[in-house]
Length: 203
Ligand SMILES: Cc1cn([C@H]2C[C@H](O)[C@@H](COP(=O)(O)OP(=O)(O)O[C@H]3O[C@@H](C)C(=O)[C@@H](O)[C@H]3O)O2)c(=O)[nH]c1=O
Image 1 (cartoon, rainbow, N blue to C red):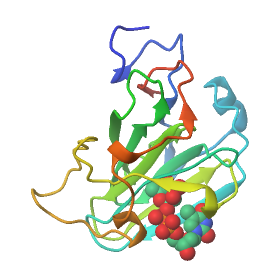
Image 2 (cartoon, rainbow, N blue to C red):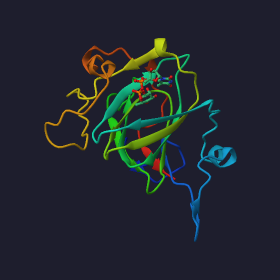
Image 3 (cartoon, helix red, strand yellow):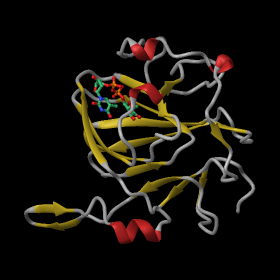
Image 4 (tube, rainbow, N blue to C red):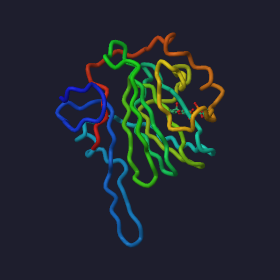
């Protein structure tokens, strides 16, 4: 492994948990076709997840923010996220207790024009910000929707210090629930560190 504990790594000998997956688009004069998910290809990347749901959501206004969310065990979810219209800034926060990068975050843009997908396993809070009006996001989830197991963190917590790409002082559009999450200082995570570094592998 490389020395840095988080960032983008290209050494794939020890697969970090978070992966940016770029699938080949087969282009011809009609347009293009891509297999957004292929079980055998994903198993080769170490992703053996059996997904059970597909979710599709739209955010009307630019700078609409959803998050930061997770479901606790035994209903923790693995997610495979893709922006199918517009562009989003997608963020994961390490909430594995005992992790050397506990509370650190990784953010990456996902866009319609490139179709990149982000694989986010358990142990991370997740959120995203729309960067254009009318963004649409679709994601696969490995677990049932169990709102009673849902938890969240304040998207704007200074202890997390997430650099959301918005104009200075701009207040994003958020849900009522997302305005009520606890601050990081009062947060008791249900997840434990599994030894894998916080890093983004680009595939
Ligand atoms: C998340 C979710 C919501 N719902 C319903 C509940 C509610 O009436 C409506 C909107 O729910 P929410 O406000 O929780 O939706 P939203 O804020 O978009 O929640 C999502 O945020 C992103 C960042 C994630 O990571 C997702 O896992 C999920 O938590 O949709 C489902 O039926 N299934 C689901 O999986």
